[in-house]
Amino acid sequence: MPKDRKIIPTILSAAIFIIMEVAALNMLANNNAIQRLWFAQAAHRFMAKAWGASEEIKYYFSLKKQNEMLAAENFFLNEKLRFYSERLTEKAQSSLQLPESGNEGGFEYQNASIVKISNNKQHNYIIIDKGSEDGITTRSGILTSQGVVGIIDAVSKHYSYALSFRNADVSISARLGQEGAVGPLIWDGHSTNGAILKEIPLQYKFQPGDTVWTSGYSSIFPPDIPLGVTGDSRIVNGATNEIKVTLFQDFTALRFVTVVNNRNLEDIEELEAHE
Amino acid sequence: MNKSFTLIFLLLLAGQLLISNYFHVTPYLLLTMLPTMILCIPSRYSTTVALFVAFATGFAVDFLTEGLAGLNISALVPVAFCRKWIIRLVFGEDLFSRGDDFSIKRYGLGKVAMAILLATSLFLFIYIAADGAGIRPLWFNTLRFFGSLIISFLLSLCVADLLTPDDRK
Image (cartoon, rainbow over all chains, first blue to last red; front, side, top):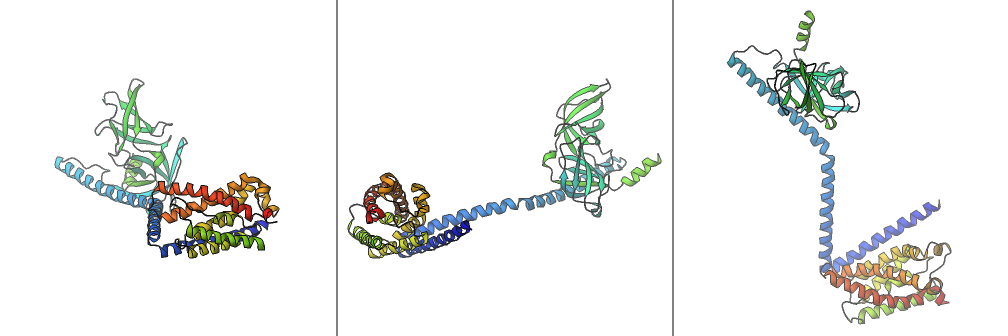
């Protein structure tokens, strides 16, 4: 109670002070041209700063929307790029009269946002904001322009659960260089951007810094997506090379991804089952 | 308010009007006792009362002298608003809890001088800034501030001695 009693007179006296001071300054400005100009300049300076600050704050809070717009635009441009590169490949194949590859042209893409991601475990996972109602199925791939991110493992109506590439159980088929040897690429198990390319026959020569691409043999990911660059290597059992790969993808800064779905996956799996 | 305080206050106001009208030795000096007069309003009176007294006093000086209309009010009203904070800062909370007023005899010259310096500095800072209106150079305003502070402070010590309760008995 005593505090309340003190607050009301303080607010009252502050209000009276502001009214009196404004009245005095108004009197000063109205009766003297120089003071009027001074107040006007000061008011303009203040307004400029206030507007500038509010614009900056507005800009900061609109970044999320801008990011979403950029991601959508990026997705659209990637779609176009894929469309034209597929056309170019088809044209090249028909001119060389090569048989048509089974997977090329059979992929559907759609963009998604990451809702949750784990990065500090041995079995990391990702949850995205698209589900079965959006046409997502299990064994769809998740990628970005920087590389492969994960594989969808379970799907609900509006969300999908994926195994991150940084998961000890995930292995993807990768190619060393554009036309080099193919082997499984797995996460090295500890670093944020490290992977190991295994089972590369010794006869295949490579240099540290060579690019590693998706092979297209997995039926989950399309071919020729850049994944990372090679580093040191070691010979295993005297028969194959095991190569360290530095991934392009930064898993700690992931937000927008592309889900890739192989339209021919069922047919391929059916054929595999018959064998 | 105490009758003798009111009478002395009005006499001092008349003195300030005379100073403002006739004491123009140099533009570097501004002689004022208004902030000390507001500071010496008995502590039992609230900030709101002090604000009204300051507004009326500043209004009288502005319209009865040759200065700029609104200049004294705009500088004196903040002194009234900060009066209790200045007293609390220099003399402590006890002064208010005892319902006491400060005086040179009771609290010593040092503390009273400090309170006068704070109140006069606040007044002069606003007065000189508004009077200069961004036209006067900084060195001029600084020189005017310190020159006026010294001369006004000396005059204000006498004013405080006149207005403080112990001396009115």
